[in-house]
Image (tube, rainbow, N blue to C red; front, side, top):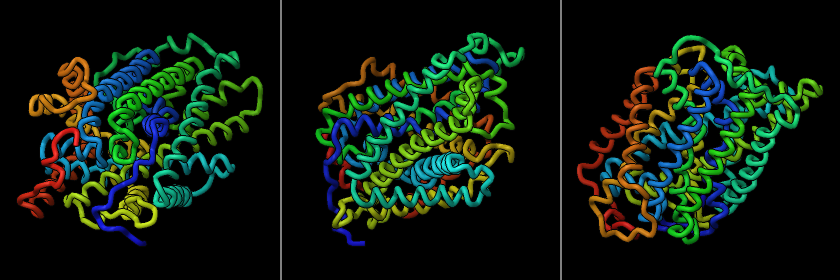
Length: 471
């Protein structure tokens, strides 16, 4: 595999349309199709379930308003790594890369590949295929997309554009389906699944599930070095992508709630994808549920494929930046001599994602838990810690660097970053209480990363640390 020297730069080949597609495509993946079941299991009726989706969307929008300022200050490859390093120091930048590689990005890839395999198997009518073979399909999807992204950012960007707009069209069809088929039933949305009072831990668990569906709105930052005029296009791409996804998610969840009862949505013994069950119910009077189920499974497969591609496209840019600046092995900071992509980082990420794919049962709090939920909750715990620090970093940098050139400024600062930080801190504490195994493992990985950093470098000066905001 030919490589240029490690100081090689990435090419600015991605336009504003691709930037919006990356934001929306990273968010729309498996969550809107599967997580309504986890939300229904956590809260007793549809109104509270929809509230959780609204809260998740508002948090994503508030976070985007804040992080857009950082993306303008530091339009370089690495995203959160750069923001954390410049705000809190190189240790925190390293820890983000450490957690992103071992848990966050690769865990997301493994979870998405799992859903892709399940839907692909249903599309071809082989629902009884053994779990090991399904995992093989998932691993093959990771390998193929890794190969595509090695060939060039344009290929990854083209695939992202295509799959994102297919996803948007699919969600619009789902939102309209109960009204077109005449199956919308308002009484289902107003009925309560239980008379028991709502535990606050249940609402916290519902918001955690929803945050997975919205997760990905920060994924544009790592691509800043490959986007044309990043200081001009990054903020509007963030707002457009998050706003579009929030509107689609709320519309689809209303459609679910008007067609399926909370008992049906929450059934822990039903391992069928919620969206497929929804389509079957909506089209029950007309027959052809089997064909409809396969069509929606195909749509979900495309949706998850796009989100999988987004993660495989974005993650290696962080490891590339860390390698280029000496915080990760320097060979990860090399750009392919022909394709101008961080090829080694892409391959390494794919290998570890496949390992996680086959090791999800080792981190289950409950053996009955869906492996998909195991992986996603495991991912979200680590993500919340660092992404909340990133958002609060806007306040820190306003104080430390008040005169830095800001072509965009977060409105209502510090109230928006502080409000976001407090809300996510509550979700984090609830996760520690309700999911101790995954929380402990997440904290252990962070501690191990700090130990590795301290043992390998007593002093670290990043090449870009002194460049300052806006460089």
